[in-house]
Image (cartoon, rainbow, N blue to C red; front, side, top):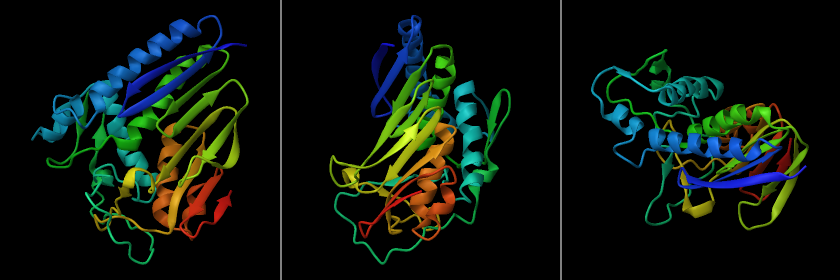
Amino acid sequence: MREHRRTVEVFGGRVALRAAGRQAPLALAVAEALLRRMHAALTRFDPESELCRLNADPRPTVPASVLVRKLAAAVPYAGELSGGLVDATVDPFLEPAHDLPEDDPHPASPDPRRRWASVFSDTATVTRPPGVALDSGGLAKGLAADLIADHLREVPSFAIECLGDVRAGGAHRTLRVASPWDDGALAELALDDGAAATSGVTRRGRHIVDPGTGLPAHTGVVQATALAPTALEAEVRAKAALLAGPGDAPGHLPHGGVLVLASGEIICL
């Protein structure tokens, strides 16, 4: 069955949408509109976005749209699932003007303040201590893929590729896990009806932050790919595995995945 395709520029990159069936063109048009609404609400790079206005609001409880409330609900979910390693109250990336020296690899640690646990959402508002800012980052990618998947459930098959997060359903697909160092593929994973996410530290000179120290994390894992039922869960598990270090990373990938260690070793789970 022919798949229709659409590419949308949001979240600082490209989201690729695929859907099969007679209703696919209309479904993809609606999906694009939803993605653009999510970007407008959740981007942290536009001071007029709803998320930025929430973060700047001095009130502990702020009225919020359903999209921002979903992001807020994902914050404690991610913290709990990862043991505090995925902390959306911490700026997740450092992008220095020059390379930072790498010390001996060691696992990252959670922020003992556990600010993620103080974030709540209900049917109309978001509550968090004043001064605690929420970062959309990877959580928004996972949420977007899952929300679009819910919308595309009526078509025979679909796939969403959202900046490293993939959500698919209705057809057998093979996911190629790209190398963190070049354009080659390290492994292939079956993806029928579920999700995958990849988190890494070597592309674009990016450094992921150790939430316990606020410094770049050098854990001995340079890339982690996680399989999971939802893209949000896969996103959290991939980043947690990356931050946990080689010894604990497999425990964050209960549904399977691939780890790339700084030594060059590749571990398929």
